[in-house]
Amino acid sequence: MVAGRLQEKNGFYYIVLSYTDSAGKRRQPWMATGLPVKGNKKRAEKMLAETRKSFTIPKGQVSELSPDMAFSDYMRYWLKMMRTAVTETTYSSYCFNVEKHIIPYFEPLGVTLAGLQPRQIQSFYLHEAETLKNTSILRFHANLHKALKYAVRIDLIASNPVDKVDRPKPQAFMASYYSAEEMEKLFAAAQGHKLELIIQLAAFYGLRRAEVMGLRWEAIDFEAKTLTIRHIVTSTRIDGKKILVEADRAKTKSSLRTLPLVDPIAERLKAVKAQQEYNQKICGNCYNQEYLGYV
Image (cartoon, rainbow, N blue to C red; front, top):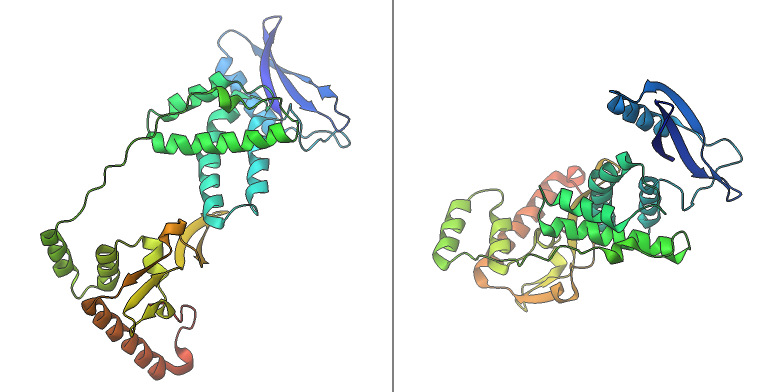
């Protein structure tokens, strides 16, 4: 999508598009809307948005990247570039931030990559702060800074406008913990439920959801009485499809750890393992092999 703006001339609105052709020449075609300026601003803005979406740069003039490209289009390009540069879960997070928040705010403004101003970014943060916490806005800040840092590196823009913007202060996380009495109530309530083991592991060891779902039998040593956290399974959404991501890693290096296997948990795990082996023997070739090896 090319950049564009409305221009008043002789009492009428005109659409002025802007793009740089393959030869590096800036082009700004004018298009008449036929709408008088008085009382037609919203209609003109709607025509501008539709024209920008439908306009196709003439063959031979296309330039994939340029300072005059729409900032929203640059962010789409940056997302494509990140597709193979980061993990699937990180990419999914980038997509959500860019497609659901950054592009919807900046695209209607018609701002170009080179024309993006620090004040516009600051206004974006203030707008998002009306409904979101600072933690979310800091993620947008990180995405914008990284994307525009690349634009500086390949000489599309001279400096990074995000460097001139005051980012929100991180909000301190105040964790709360269950008491021993509350833990007992939780375990009692979960008894017999299909999620009982998941709740026990998560509550007793403080495991993250991805760590519980990624727990495999090979990580459990009943003789040494240890349980090792080194594999995760998490769900994410990419291109509108929900996928499972399996990886031999954890969120941080300190998350790779070996924990003591206490007797009550060990007995519960042994019972689950025996049941799985029995089911596999009974079902034979009909047994679901997709998640074989997972607790």
